[in-house]
Length: 157
Figure (tube, one colour):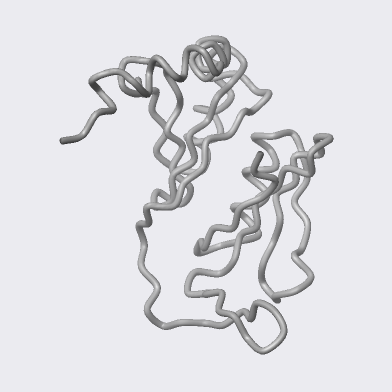
């Protein structure tokens, strides 16, 4: 289980507030690095996303991880997360429209649907509202997931 992840965005406070709204959770300051915020799900697992200002990098230092600013920031990234959200698909699109951010329903490998929700139109969150969770949960059950992983679609030469 992943309890939290970190993403770099242009406006950490605003993005944390929007993700907290999607989760019906809270946005709070991240105490260890100024200008950074958490979106907290408030579930029993401590699920959260830390949002750092774009250009923040993590590097090891003598005792732990250090936070540094890098001028080599880019817009798009391969980093993304798939999140269950308690709100409807219609509510997701309403939030995306309000923010001016792309949101679109997509089918993945002909196995399940999700909503691509693009934070600041650069960082991808794959959202799973309640209406899409049943198909996804069925697919990821161990016996079904083994069949999927053994299928031709996941074999490479």
